[in-house]
Length: 196
Image (tube, rainbow, N blue to C red; front, side, top):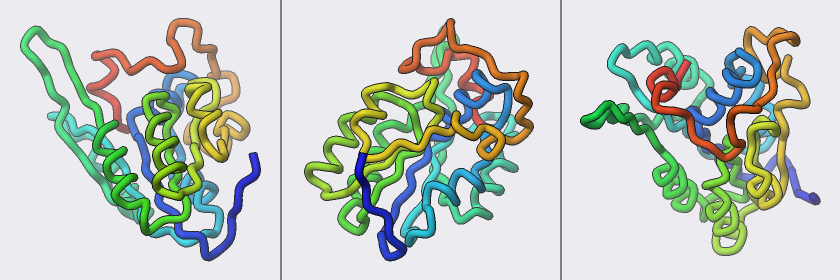
């Protein structure tokens, strides 16, 4: 893939925290180092907006995480975990992230999506065709949608340097994803602890 990166390039970063959290947790039993992740994603370019999408729980234990992202200059968008009768749980920011990326695209040269979720392929294609933006995807390659990686103008695979992109990383902790499909959503039980 041939992409352009220069210091005056206007960049917007949109972070699917649930997707990255569950990938790091399920593959490495670790947490994401968002400081290094943002630094390498932005790569010395002009950051216009960085926004993270997350779910809040009744316990409020994710507040420390939200504060840490705010200190990095990341704007938080949150919504409550929905619990339906019968116990089903839902927490999804896909539409909100997509709308925000499309809305911001006229002021950006590059949109960086921090997710491996294949549901964002139409967003990537729209931004490239109608938004006039270069689209980069940053995620763990092993748990990322192949179609998303192929659609992006560039893909930064966090699996290539887990020591840099993970907190509490131990090389022996890595495991394969035999029980989960790469495009699958977190289970209902996983949703409640989806932010760390």
